Amino acid sequence: MKETITKKKITRGITKDFAAAFKQSELYKLYGEHKDELFIGVRNNYLNLYYNCDSIDKIEYKKRDRKIVCEIDKYYLDGNHYNSKEKGKRYKIEQIEICKQYEVIKKHSNAKVTPEKKAQSKLVLLNNNNKESNWFCVDVEYVKQFSNKQEKKEADFNGRFDIIALSKAKPHKVALIELKYGSGAIGGESGIYKHVEDFTKFCDKDYFQGHLKEEIIEIIKSQIELGLDVPFELPSEKDVLSPEFYFITLDNNAEKENASTPKQTMAGYLFNDKRWGCKKLTTKDSVESKFGDITRKDNKFYTTFLFSKETLKSLRITDIIDGGYDVKIIPE
Figure 1 (cartoon, rainbow, N blue to C red):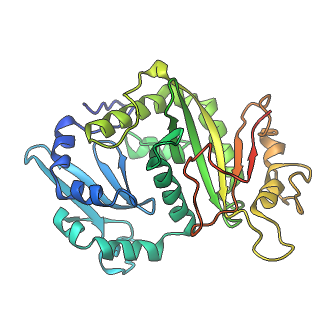
Figure 2: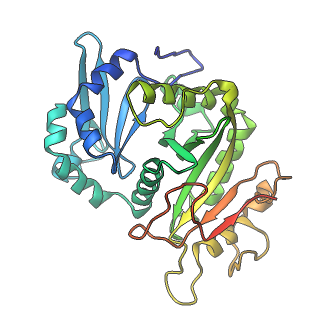
Figure 3: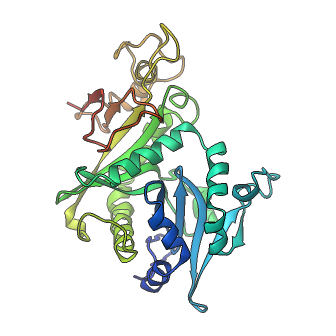
């Protein structure tokens, strides 16, 4: 597979040589031994190895040397948070060291990552390891990639999705998923309002047809070449339907007696009236005041809401969309 780069467009994927070399690597053995807790994210000519939906290793292929090379944030090795200039910066490391230090890396990731990201990872892996699930999660922590820094700076849509899933049945439905855990992340700068704003821009710009659909196919192509357990053949563009949007909320429990559940709290940000048992409306603009009622199909943008009381420790949902949710609010 060739990576295609133009001034306006980036296609994801890795080369066949990269895939072949990775399948012979120590990291591939590590992944095979820990499929229940690791996810391989296909990026623009590199791979991310995710634990807790946390990128613990950036993996590249040096064509001249025919060698797999790795980069890691030193935090995962020693648990130290460095100054702002070094925060998030990656350093070269031999892949055998990743394998040797795997339990240490996990320990430091567990100490840093939020329950929401841990639940996201568990939900994806439970789904993908369930052969009876109707869906397959092809990517996590999806971020739109840009040709250069200037393009990124000028963009008003950064294209972020927690999870991208495809139905196993053909033609393949696409689920673009935002995950929430408890009430903590429903409001604020990265809350429900901001996500709806971004999703609306995504639709207005027709980013799916113009970009994401092709990326999804390229991701799947790379996953197949990597020998991952993709449960269907490589789809053509006509086999991939327009996306459906989902908000999944786990730990839909009130933190204390008589407090609001996350569903009730979310309603306060979504609507102009107290639906869903809402106890308090937001003091700022609601989603409905700007984008309409997103629970209705006659609205410009609409989405499905799934709620579960299950927590990180008790999570047993093995079908990410069609699983046993306590509440399913499907647009009418």
